[in-house]
Length: 380
Ligand SMILES: [Zn+2]
Image 1: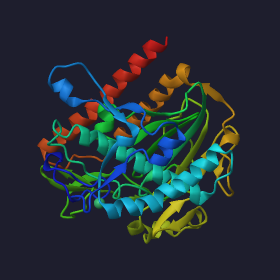
Image 2 (image 1 turned 90 degrees about the vertical axis):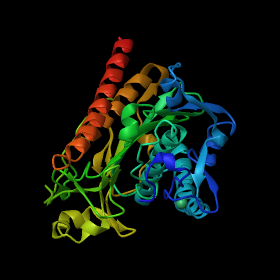
Image 3 (image 1 turned 120 degrees about the vertical axis):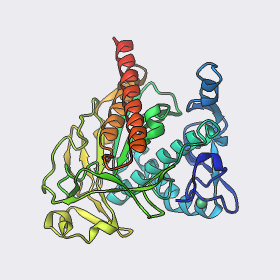
């Protein structure tokens, strides 16, 4: 992993290296800003930590959408522009035009949402890097997208003006565990979550047992700390070969359509646990990784998709945005807590690391619980 900590200067948000032939990547792509209004309109994002340390009022950063960009290498920017942005724009246009989308379009869209979510997290860190100079980003866009199990839920709204609203990224838990967020785009709300091994067991695929962090010599290890690099190791178990609902281990409050996909890393695909008829008939090999078929869940279906699907046709309920925004935020925070609870064991690590990781988990979970309680009381 290229960067030691945030205090060491500019890094490319895709590869984490010092940006080569400097370029700027819009975290919210320009095609999406145009689709939702004026390129130069302002929006609020994240929390300004400097204000907290100076004892000033809690304040969000204010940006023009068109200036919400962060350093990247030219080659990284060009590659992901072609590989991700163009297909995502095409698929989003189809969704908004009430057209059907295919397996490969949904798969690519899920990866695009991985990119937006990871980009928002890195932007949050970048903006606060003076106050978080000891913070270690342990992954970047290129090392995190399309690699882990993921979920995307879509809901139809009324009363949200044309535009973009981002949900669930201004929390302490998102800083430590940036694995679930929401984004409203005009009249559709998307909630996306991704985490290693999140869905494989309940989707009937071989699944990892409880993971454990160990120190590693692997320079691309999964977690970087001031004490060294760590990898999560886990034992692979045979799949139950049937789907067990709810796939996410928590039921979502509102009714839209949910897409679920488990992703099997190419290194694991060769294991004998994956050579079963169930795995073969419910997965597809793409870019050397194995991707499960998409499981779709709505009032109209609960199945692996075998044909194209019209997303809007499944959004039979329309939610009044201003009345129900809080309930969606609670769902996002609840999912964030499920992912925190899914973190690897740390019992074999030195006490100092265990203590730090434990305190990050407790702080993240408790702060989410406090926000949820506050929202519920406000809703009464
Ligand atoms: Zn780069």
